[in-house]
Image (cartoon, rainbow, N blue to C red; front, side):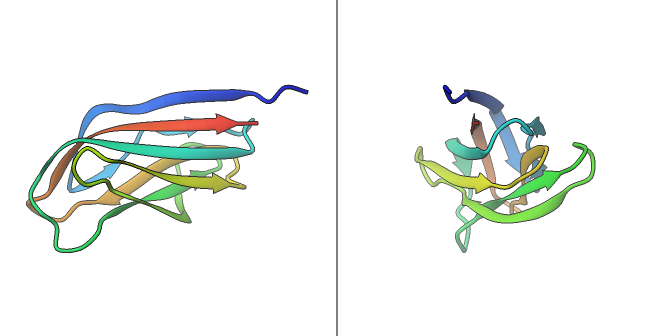
Length: 112
């Protein structure tokens, strides 16, 4: 049986400032997922390393933290986080401190 794979751009040239969350993605058919975050630009210098939280949902409306954190990239680096056993819906969420902003592209790669 051939495995199925899909790459979805869930955020494209999106500014994250303060509280943020990506567009939700229905992924019940997949058995594994990888979020990639690419920073296009950043404003401000954080005092500590920052990360986005993977969130899961049974219906795409009510969310809880899954436990995986994806580090936010510095410069034009790309970071990633792997997820398994996530149920129906996935997204990233987090909060940037005052004075910090990022423009990002977020990819979600799903495999059955």
